[in-house]
Image (cartoon, rainbow, N blue to C red; front, top):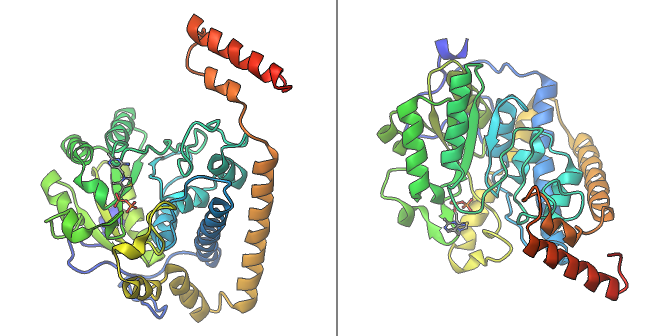
Length: 374
Ligand SMILES: Cc1ncc(C[n+]2csc(CCOP(=O)(O)OP(=O)(O)O)c2C)c(N)n1
């Protein structure tokens, strides 16, 4: 059992890694994942990267207004996705987690429908792009105010504790989020109550233009766990298997009643903060280039190749298969058509108040006058 033999020390000064940059297994324990699982993780890494590239293109084409690129975060996101029980545990992601929701199997048509705000969007176009949510998969809809999802995530974990079924919550966020009052209130409460929650920080060293040294005087994010009475782990976020194994251990601990944990995953975002940002104004190109050399996809590929589980042909096949899936999903999301403005009046009131009823009527008349269905 995992908790009987913990594999990772909390508060280690160096990040935990299980495969080296050149793809060798370097952990002091044996790999216990089968070949299909390893290839499945690799697929999810590539899927996340290709979705990211597609979204940037869609934004450039004017089809979506906002993209928060996730390239460079895939190792952390896919590691988390494989460590939870999908549909049983609860996930509170943040806006950069597109790769995470894709990896847990959120249908791509919905994903692009959300990004394009078409009728394929289960949230009916009411959210900003990059704000997914899924009732079926227990994914709390992404909230724009930084760290505002942390206290509700702890509330979910407390309800899981009370229900006593061993379900767990995972809440993700960036390094900047750890400076917010909501973050401290939530993490403190989780520590005080022993809530079954894992706080996973995708530390890309920047909160838009604010670098980590100006973000916190703390020696890293994991160190903050000390104050709240929980273990804090520093993980190499460019090593998907390290992220997976650390998450698996702390999720298992939370499931068994050992309380919360904080996991800091050292990642990097290759692109700008968002489609509205110019990162060249606050960070040197050499720094970006150096992190790109540590790419999580290339690293897992080297690991698979050493085991003869991957090669050029498989790579080509995978990339064209995913490209086809993305073409189809985007086409289906677009074909669903734009959201009907009428939805503005739905789902809030059981009975529409008179002033909104009047507005809806005026809107319908205007549509009829314009020759549209009203
Ligand atoms: C409460 C609040 N303050 C400010 C913002 C504006 N804002 C959006 S993203 C962001 C940076 C967050 O950085 P971090 O938490 O490190 O995540 P990253 O985007 O780097 O992944 C800020 C300040 C916001 N959305 N909410």
